[in-house]
Length: 322
Ligand SMILES: [Zn+2]
Image 1: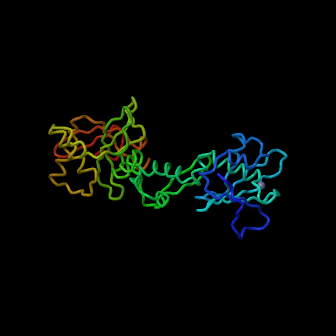
Image 2: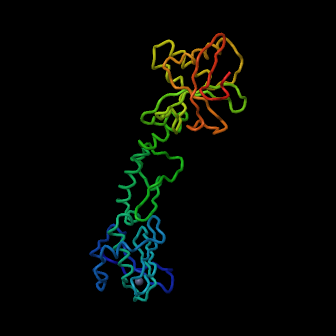
């Protein structure tokens, strides 16, 4: 590509400029090397040492650590305009020549994709279109209007300009599902975990609540963390056994129990729980150990029904012994 001696007016004094009458994609490394014949061969390490101080679409300021004992590398600005490419450096090279700093910065941009995409519209569109697929925008005509690039050494990050744009990928879908599901349902059950029944007193009102949970038990029958609360209603569709259906319905009634009245329905629900047709381990929650359902706060219980009311007998001394 032919360089042009024409330099736009009103440039800063004390800095020398080089103007290409075409944009960067039309430029090759051979062009740069021909215009800077005294430049020693630029190896990979030299080119990757050049880093942007500022970098936005079509504009950047670049520098490099000075080599041992060598002079400092002055900041080189690169500005791409519709008519061409303007490079500026403050070293003492004669005006109108492409200095070694400008040449090295240009070679670095030309040969490093992560820098080139800021100046090469075709390569940038390729990158943005790949990212746009996750947002359903791959057919948008002006992807630069929807996405912005950020150079985060050593890579380029693509992010939507509008905070409201949401990517639909396997990872984001999984995250959304886990946020939408009630607590615990999105979690994967730990290997060897068992369903358990936990009797608690309501945190504020002190009446009985009964929760279905899931946790791993030790060989001694103690509960290991984490303890995951389950929704008993989810079990209703998995069994045709009447006792089990009554059991889980009863648990659902007591899971969020705000009513301490001894209605017939309440007593029937409690009897169905005490029946415990699947013989699930039962525990008492001790809120003085922890407000939350944790292993140390759970003590094993044995349930048995004794007419005319339900009796909960603890194997240890707990507040559930009546
Ligand atoms: Zn220079």
